[in-house]
Length: 208
Image (cartoon, rainbow, N blue to C red; front, side, top):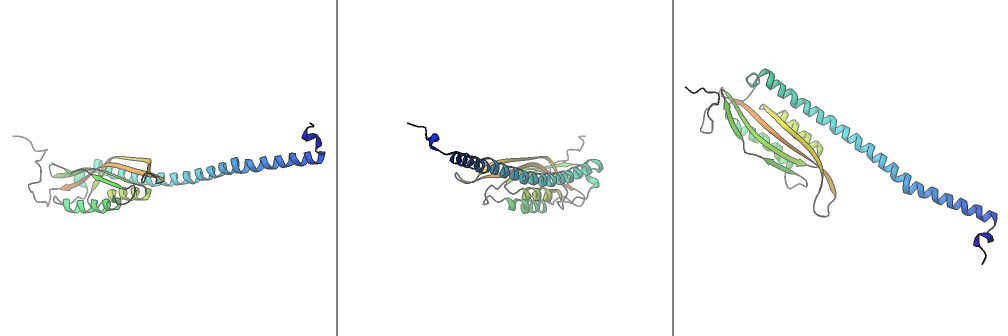
């Protein structure tokens, strides 16, 4: 049996070679170049988003560090603070933040520990630990800024920010979820405040 190629004319062979080149070219475009271009475009978009998020995070961290330095350098008594018994006002303020992280929303979570009340001289400190999660990065920044700009003096410490993938339901799409844990302390003063049964003993008092 004669080879099939031997029955083809020179022109047919050239056309077959050109057709093979065209097929390989389009295969390269759709199987290699197009996915690569899309990946590069997605990475550029993601890089821009990360840079925007980093700028927001840096701004909030700078504000928190400024407030912490203000407390350390000037002392809590040099900063405007409410009088003792401002717990209701502080709790209401924190509640306005917690409502944004309602568990009825996908990927949302809010946890808050009991408040630890301490007194040192005329200074009152109400400290609690807070943890919240959301798939909305802007909401995380909003919450941190709300804490930092509290009308009653609030100091944040040990702020930890993590990001991870989470799925809503067993067949839901994966989503980037942001989680923040922090220690928050509201400062008050006994000047103008009234003592009650909840007020702890003064840790700075000397024992006679």
